[in-house]
Image 1 (tube, rainbow, N blue to C red):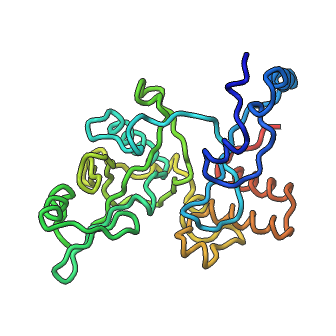
Image 2: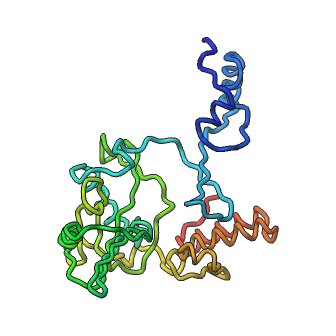
Image 3: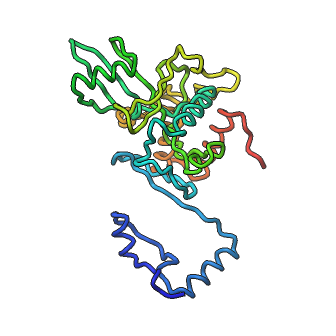
Length: 288
């Protein structure tokens, strides 16, 4: 094997557009050494991992790491499918299934709001106020069955791996960061698509027979997983409330990270707290 495939550390850094400290990668050493080190790693049974560190919109939050396997996203541009895509029905079916457990993929960033005030119509996508001409506003009102006042639509925000395009029955979901638990669902559900105004795809209203509420027999307990603003002795800070962090799992996670950073808790303490939370809120006991 030649050396043409090898990459330089600086080449890698230019490609990702970020400054970071890199470990010695296999692709930075001669071919023979790379093969030898890879074989040694496999012999030692070292697991393969890929890690991503996510800072939403530049917001400074307690450090954390999301670890998940490498995957391919669906082929649709910018992650948004057309209204004719089979992923539309798949998304809606999975969202309705999740809602039986009190879970939704709709978050503050995908809620669409239409409001009439003082003879004017305001339209928001997430927290962004959008501008449309009169004809477009009329069309949006028709599509959303808007009759005045205030109306919010829950935009489905599920992200599948590419397998979903080839075989929907084998669909896998990635990126669980945006999932919330609700006590009850009030807003219509809308599939977000690329080829329609305001991304308005198929809408399922509360009057639709397909619209579901959480099943009390199987739903996640709201006091642990919901948006009460407090879990055990922990509460959301003012900074977290400003960034709309009100759901209890995040409140717990941020407080544990803060306590660990300030050396008020050890790593073992944090693990014990997380296990206690999971055992209490799900009823699942950790296997010995």
